[in-house]
Length: 106
Image 1 (cartoon, rainbow, N blue to C red):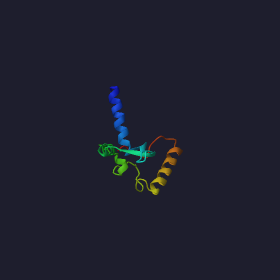
Image 2 (image 1 turned 90 degrees about the horizontal axis):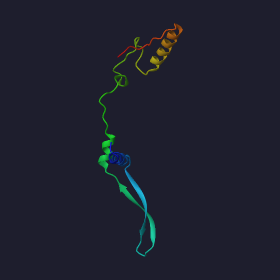
Image 3 (image 1 turned 135 degrees about the vertical axis):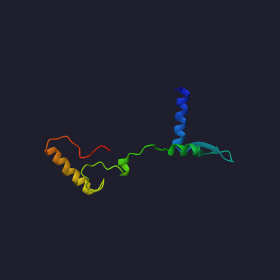
Image 4 (image 1 turned 30 degrees about the vertical axis):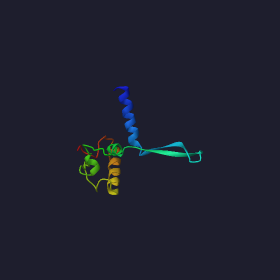
């Protein structure tokens, strides 16, 4: 990657992270005095929106609940009944000094 490409990619990412930037500056008034003010730089909203619209090709089926791989199914995934049953199964596995899983491959 070229150094200029790297800088351009970093600038694009920085612009995509912020809605805008307020830069302090001094403005002159009609009578010749100056006051402190802020110049607001507003960034391109299309770049900002492009970075937030990421799509994924694969969703783990265990996250949506369509792939329940527990061998002895008790309750639904995440329920208190399932948590208690898993605790009992792991205790029984440890008591028998075996290294097996209560889950099967999906």
